[in-house]
Amino acid sequence: MSIWDAPVLDSPEPSVAEHVARYLRTDGESGYLEAGVTNLVLTTVGRRTGRLRRTGVFFGEDDGRYVLIASSFSGGPRHPSWYLNLRAHPEAQVQIKGERFLVRARTAEGEERARLWRRMTDVWPAYDTYQARSTREIPVVVLERVPG
Image (tube, rainbow, N blue to C red; front, side, top):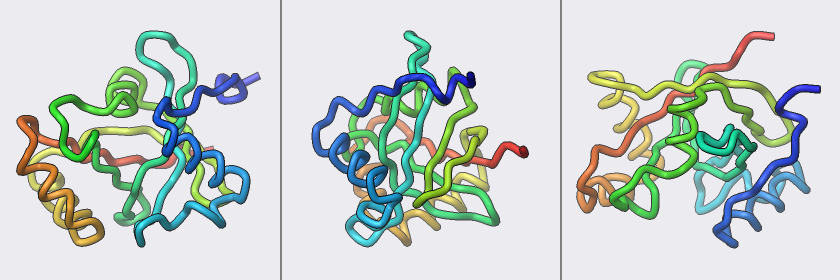
């Protein structure tokens, strides 16, 4: 049995948990597009508990890779839990519509971060507002498929 077959805890935020449940129940037919933005379901390994954690996240694409913005509560002062989990355990599972696959995460830096940030603000302009009100640099996360 793979770790990815273990029980999963959904986001404690009720609206996110409802979104994820709806997405999974319909293979993304309901939930893939929310507010006009593409969404995926991200399952991470908890950095403290080792338990699987699941949430929904807006995403963009860049040359076969998936791009996430770790904005957390519209630019709040702390990184979201899913991002902290990815820093501790970069391998994760993603579901896009009905397809599930493993990815390896890394944080974009320098020019790559700047380019991907611009790409994502074209998709969701509010990210610029989130960054303006935040005291931290909001991370840009790149997910690359794990072969196999």
